[in-house]
Length: 80
Image 1 (cartoon, rainbow, N blue to C red):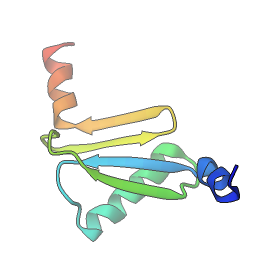
Image 2 (cartoon, rainbow, N blue to C red):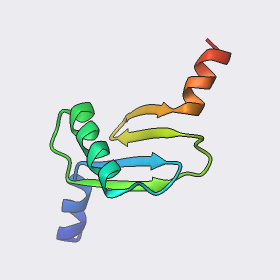
Image 3 (cartoon, helix red, strand yellow):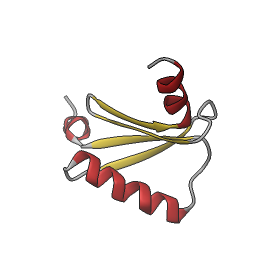
């Protein structure tokens, strides 16, 4: 196995799904939230634009997902 590939697999990565590209200020706030949610040092944060999100953010880290999207809130009201 490639030495860099093994290191790549050990990185703590978070994917942040957003309905639009975030501003630098929004990225800073999202990074602060990532730190609070994970409670761990995160090596890499990837921002992924998902135009299917109406509003809000969705965070994926290891086997966890935090869904702060408007769609998730609507679904929890419609399907309690």
